[in-house]
Image 1 (cartoon, one colour):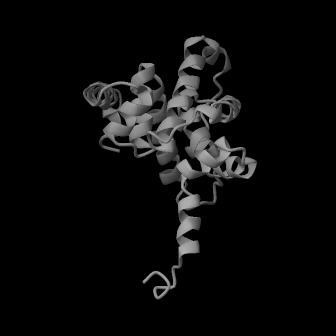
Image 2 (cartoon, rainbow, N blue to C red):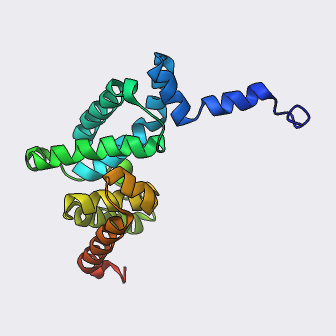
Image 3 (cartoon, rainbow, N blue to C red):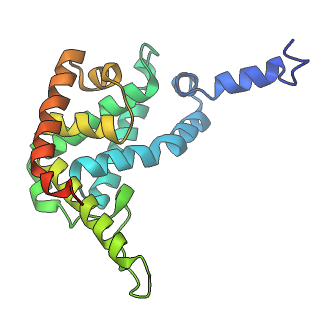
Length: 203
């Protein structure tokens, strides 16, 4: 049946081998190439997550290195009991919260960059949509600043929910709390954001 569909057993094994959990199990067994594959796949999403937590692109890069170093060091104890990304973001959240709590972020936070950590570039005056783009950029910056003011766990929950599309169960596993606690965190966070960003509603 598989051969008739043009999808043989070797193809199936290759697909399975490319799953995150399988790659990590290969890393556990000493396969350095699989770690490189995981790093290539997840590095940018993790940097974006960390950037949204700390609002500094250079520090996000530095923290991401720490995250993947921890992933590699934990390879021998890794067990695929949860989604790999849940385990990965749990480590990333721990690293980010440690950074935020030790007070360094107040000294190292740089001006906000553009979407996904890209530096905001000057817009050409000749651009016919320059006003619309300036408005959109301003809204993005205001939203990010509002998120930055949230308590740390609320901030993490919002970023995981809004920007990384994790569901309540996945966020609960990442933050190591109950689903009801996640719902409470998100409810309080979105209520706060609605209040702080009410002036954008008519924009």
